[in-house]
Image (cartoon, rainbow, N blue to C red):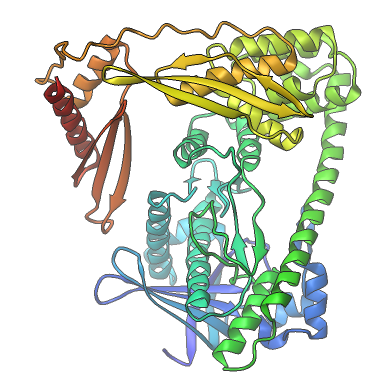
Length: 591
């Protein structure tokens, strides 16, 4: 590796504290050489120094609409430590060799010097990719290709990774949706996010392998967090929902996860679906990264580590508490601002025209008043029936005071759940956050009826030392039975009549009945027609992708009742067709 490295920075157009640069190359065997260069902040800010204590007191750089409050003094953050183009700067390098399948073959961490070739903003990236004559075209195009492959790989491995170019939507590390201010920033943002996640993951593995105490970034799931497949479907729904509903969806997904925290013990990262993860790539902006730099730099130089594991635990507790306090302060400010806006909408009689986000604010404002809701709100609420954000339904059901109109709205919501029982489970998710409830306990039994099972579910919950129980409900799926029991339980808690939730389960074929499946048709449609004719739930298909991007292998698993079939092919649709064909063969053979 040369003494002075090449690199480019890609960041927000207004950013002045640029602490990371990148370089990407293709190796001789078709793999990737990724170099992530991070400002050597720990050289200027050693552990226990005066600057280190200042950074610890501030914990992180805080950003506002009109600017920021830096963790380190601006002469360091924006000038001395920032990787400005044409200036030699000391860096800690995460040097990674990836195989063709993007698995990490080797990680090296070293100290050296960089001269950045260009300072690029996120919005510069699309035109550079389109302009073959641009000086940074080749590096940016390679980085974009690699980032896209890394994101696809993470999704295939279960990470909550998603982006939408048309709307400028991305997920953060924890899987929560974030909407960028400029849609054209999306590709550049994804490039940096994916390469930083790769570098952070590699450093975490390096620290574990070499027994270096550092601060890990841990993210755990809630007990009621939905399955990963269901979470991805929810995230992907942003592609089709109206623009005005996106903010509500963002709030919904945010509420589904625990806060990510720092600690010297590995607890795993749910959003990324990784066993070990850390933060290393933003030492100018985050104290946790700076502490990790101090540890890694000392290890590389064969010096005593500045922080013991016990000290790291105290630092982690301090960071976690301060970040929580900062978030609470920000939340209180935003709530105050939202209430003022909601009050003006109500006073000006503009409720019916409010966006979903404003309608949520109005709902919170009226509940806070402690009186029955006005008729204008009740009418607007009913007009939005079926399209109302689930958070609004949750607020009304869980927090609305007594009042004739509030009660009628609660009854209407329960009636709506007769045909949309999945919403009841979401209400209990919300209740964990705003009421402090535990999730219900479900007792589910399975009865075998020929080919497909029938599930019976009952649910119970303890609220303020009082136990509530639901009646028993049947469905052809476990999830369906749980959802119906949840509606009944919710009605019981509210002291309101439960809607009609009974369903008639179609008679299933006797074990010796001939299975009539038209095998001359396309197997996907033949299996679907069979299910529709017999009134069975449709088969479910799931996929995995392996191999290089230019020659992937798709694995499709077809699930039908208690039966599964799995097939592989070079094309996704062919793998699905083969899996459906195998399922048909299993059904016919067993009869």
